Length: 249
Figure 1: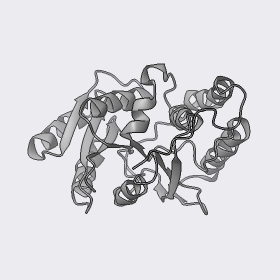
Figure 2: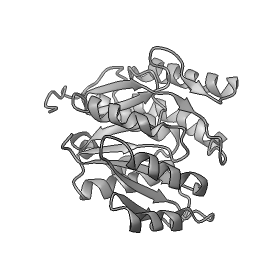
Figure 3: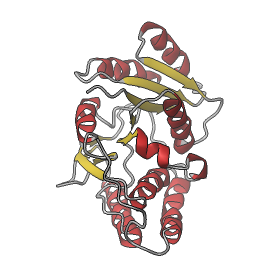
Figure 4: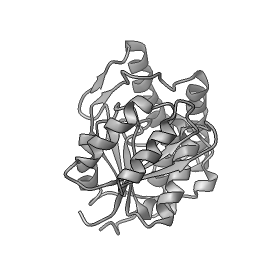
């Protein structure tokens, strides 16, 4: 694929994962570049990322001074990518819960879509190492989002996705206020209601075996109320109110 592709990986205390992740992504048959957005990890993740960037031209590092949430990290990465004219811009976790081997199928699907979502629940359930309560919460979130907003995707809170530049550029990133799972819901909803084409590809999600989860009660509450705000912003409509975009190439 000729379009320049960038995978954005936000990190906070991921020193055990960052080297093998970079090695895995570099070995993919589809060439992509990698931007590590480190939020001042006290465990030295940022220093390891800098070392990797001096060795590999495809690795870049963006340092932030403090832990400020997943959404803020991605927004900083998006701005970095747009300023450097990448055509395909991906989100991906840095703990191997997302399989780097899935990246090529995102890039392939992006030929026909403006936003490609990796779904844990498309045509079945593919989640490994989650307790039943966490799985039920995640699945219930998808039902909740669809019921209120009409957003027709199976996994609106997933964080493995690929944006076409034209779609990401259409977002007012400065107006995005959410930060956790609600950040994923908000971006997808904003593009859907503008008429951009969204597709899903099935993925297997494996919860981290190394390190600790970033889940918190505040993240859950933010996701609960953001759905109502998005519905009101869309004029209480459960369908796209923007012009349907059909200029994807």
